[in-house]
Length: 331
Image (cartoon, rainbow, N blue to C red; front, side, top):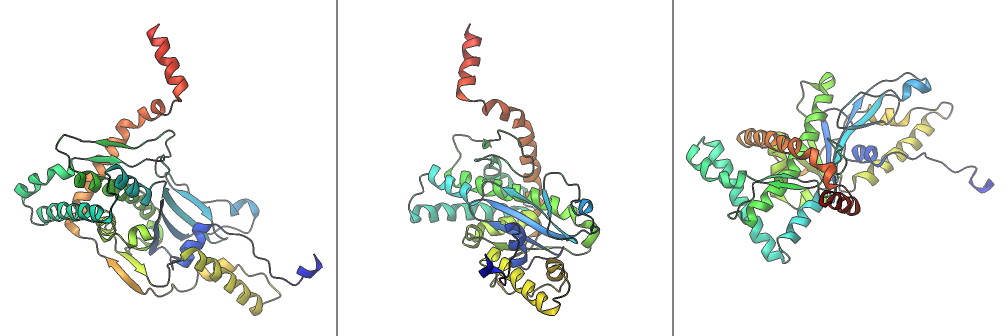
């Protein structure tokens, strides 16, 4: 194609890396979190390699997270949940909250439960805390479409512990929101642990994107409280992935003009530059008392998931195999 001989050609790059760059999350002090149908949290860390082909593929050894190179000097580390906003939509349909009025009424009740729980924890009021225990007893493993981070367990399915005849729709809906927030907390905890050598003295902030969290103030506050991190929505990063890809192309063209005789590492040029200024339009601050009781909830969820994990392989059996096992048992 001689017509294309003077055209600029750009190699592809992972959408997660583009999303981080577009979200202004290019250093260890910012974590990009996206919640749409699914959910993901990612951080960009400096991790040098030599110029040899073999060392380029050397990356940190991490458990429960994904990791891949962006360039010779940086890696992208993170984790993903198959169900984010989809879990909330499932709970809404499951509870027959089809109308906006019914959904908002349920959310108001959930907010009241959360407020009562926080008030009891903040004032160390054991009497009020015991009264709010009904809303805390439900523990959800939100693996409606399987598990990715942090366990990657084959055959994982959703499960609920603590249902009684007295369980209300608001309590159930609250537990689903909490279940997803706590799995995201598990990912964030591993991400924070991975960055200690680089920025242990800096508390990171979450730069959030995705309509599921932008439009749900209660859920956004849950994520801030459970993670213990500030959650910020930036005015410039609504379409973070496209923005990041456009930035990479723009810097590549700029680098070509600067030096046509060399082949600069464009991504390193971008990621090593000073962080872009954030322009917040929505911010959720973590509350110390809430972070404390979400820590207990996370322990309960982890214990529940560990207890039921051996059953995942059984429930994932195909119907034919289950029928076969049943027939053999009857014989």
